[in-house]
Length: 76
Image (cartoon, rainbow, N blue to C red):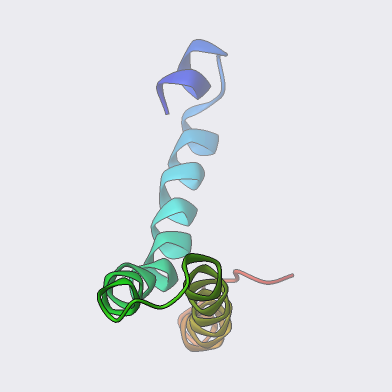
């Protein structure tokens, strides 16, 4: 946000950046539970990373569908 401010972006753009950053972070949170769980079970790193990416994609679609009902459009 500092970068946007330094580049003289308007307050509305900075606010939108913060708002959408929140909504894009939410679906990534389960990944931070899955990765250590997989690593503790000696799952290959690349396989674990692939599983985390798949989980994040699924969570993103679910989140986008759920929040659309509240007027938040994450997918065009």
